[in-house]
Image 1 (cartoon, helix red, strand yellow):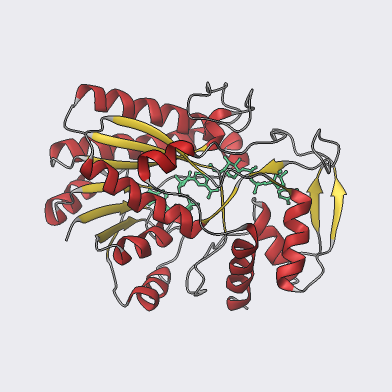
Image 2 (cartoon, rainbow, N blue to C red):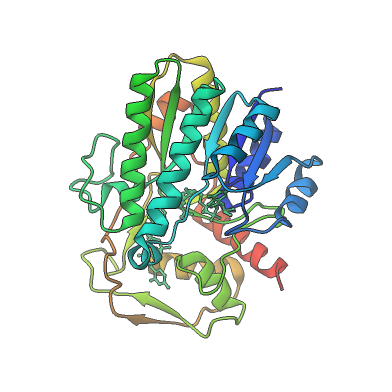
Length: 335
Ligand code: NAD
Ligand code: WQD
């Protein structure tokens, strides 16, 4: 069985990817320091797959620790999820973000080269595009200057990986540019576990519906969109997880050096569409009001998904309704 190191494998997207790796016959090995997750995630993964993946608790920035993991596991490839991801926090604590997000990537790449681990899938983000000139956004769209240290870590990481692949022809990597991941595993055994007040829309919606938050504030309805609210490409986390497996298969089969691929549905939905669709699937009314714009929000962004379809043979299968129903089921399982 092909062994794949999954850094940040206890996190939101990582845990769903670990499940799909097992489902597709891979052997995932998790590295996580639980800075934004909990060991109980392993129970959820075991309930779904019937298998408890190997896990090493530690920091990807710790080169000696990473060398020990590689020496005992000898993975054929790695998926690098481990990073901090809160845009606002990155503005307040840039050094913490540069250190964790860039530092962990440098350690991982050096360790991979030392242990002849040749395949890498990297978690990038649609944030690298900033405000796109044209919609849908293709992979050829130019990057705009990053609006946050977080966004800059993704731009720089992509560049670091591209340069390393160019210098080391044996190494093959794909940076997946995720759009807005939402939802949870349909079993409700794993899902997103935001600490404190959620930054993202869907966890805020489900916590409001559950009565944990009094109301959702919609950040602006004076944008140049049909209902005035922002438009995003919301992708079910299980679809996103499967995209990682397809990317590994692509790296194993094809002669790739470095590539970037969008992972989205290709469809945009407004904030109010999310609210109303959530109300339909949950059967609850969601207290919400229109508030001011949130600084830094892009008016609308959704992915061109042709490259994922043609190169990976992957496309999203779940709808916004499915994702919101699964997010709600997961939220209810926490009560
Ligand atoms: P998450 O916080 O749920 O998962 C990240 C995991 O990495 C956590 O379990 C955390 O404990 C671990 N981690 C962080 N730093 C570590 C370190 N130095 N050593 C070991 N473990 C460490 O986040 P997520 O939503 O699953 O995101 C995964 C990746 O996808 C991140 O790189 C993120 O930037 C990227 N991404 C996320 C989104 C999103 O909206 N969730 C969108 C685009 C890209
Ligand atoms: C979605 C929409 C808000 C909360 C972020 C990162 C991006 C990527 C995905 C990591 C926006 C609106 C939200 C609320 C609201 N992550 N909203 N009220 O900002 O599209 O993307 O996560 O790479 O880099 O920036 O996601 O979920 O925060 O917001 O009206 O309480 O919901 O204005 O239009 P965003 P989000």
